[in-house]
Length: 404
Ligand SMILES: NC(=O)c1ccc[n+]([C@@H]2O[C@H](COP(=O)([O-])OP(=O)(O)OC[C@H]3O[C@@H](n4cnc5c(N)ncnc54)[C@H](O)[C@@H]3O)[C@@H](O)[C@H]2O)c1
Image (cartoon, rainbow, N blue to C red):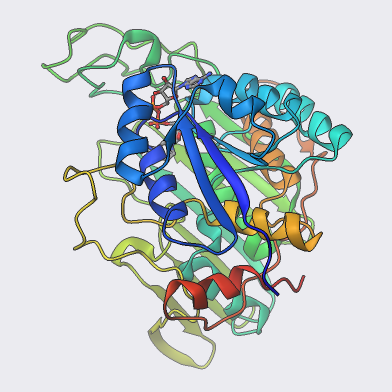
């Protein structure tokens, strides 16, 4: 059935807006991308011209009765404020991660959305990509038996080098709610919930590593201590899933640079190694499976659409844009179908809250050595159907399909 397209606008025309606008102006039947805004008009002008949409002010977006859904791609410390503005204007909202810098502020917006009957969801939506949908199918179809344990880790090198052009207050670890756990936790939590369901209890270890001085000679703050009041730079969470699976999650900004992202699920009959949950198609890496009775480690072909887009295609702007080789924004397409079809959207508010609650409590309960029993209990987002490879209208039909 053909639906009336949902008119969508975006607030925050910075780095990551590129990939959203690139995805959402591809020609989806369900999306009409109307315009974008920024506090810095040159930025929204550039994006509007690049993608053939209207440069708007934030006020124009919020006051336009035709715009139903607004994407928030402002900086993480502005998310709560901007989400609230969008909801108070009576519009559905999809926000970049994280939903908030504390559990309380994220929860307040979840409650606001519910009280107004509005949709709210947050990135990352990488779990909708080929790698994690394939992994989910393998688990759901029983290839590794009953999942028993899971591990997820992301080791980055935020701290020591510092970024030459970043003002001190924006340096990683400088602000509460902007540290590695809020920046990267969502990728792993959304992936794990997709595969295994929600977490029941968590505990953890968290610390600010003591080596924090700027080591990049190009940084004006070279040799000086890095601000660390934002929170822990290395964390390890112990997770008890509602399903009985035990897991852990390791997030560190104290590595030396290249990231080592990975998720592994160990079951009674097999093991799955799944690539970077920050990449729709594994960024060149594959899913591997080991199965009972067979010593080999087998590469598994993706069963689902939405792998990495072709890295050989240059970004439209002619310069490298963050995450240009991605499908970020798929959850917005799903939300648009959910609005028209009157069914739940996959990136639910509870899923977005789960990350903030988990990360916040792993860090904050560490000092007291307590377990935290989770309040948010997101359902596993409904899977996408397998297949649907082909042109955009074929892939779009997968997002329009909803079978929980
Ligand atoms: N840059 C990346 O590679 C990347 C990748 C994945 C996710 N993200 C996430 O995306 C979000 C944005 O990151 P970014 O790198 O694009 O930041 P950015 O600083 O490049 O862009 C944010 C923009 O929002 C604008 N803004 C802030 N408040 C506004 C308001 N009230 N109205 C209009 N515009 C407003 C700012 O002027 C700025 O241009 C963050 O949550 C980040 O974690 C970024």
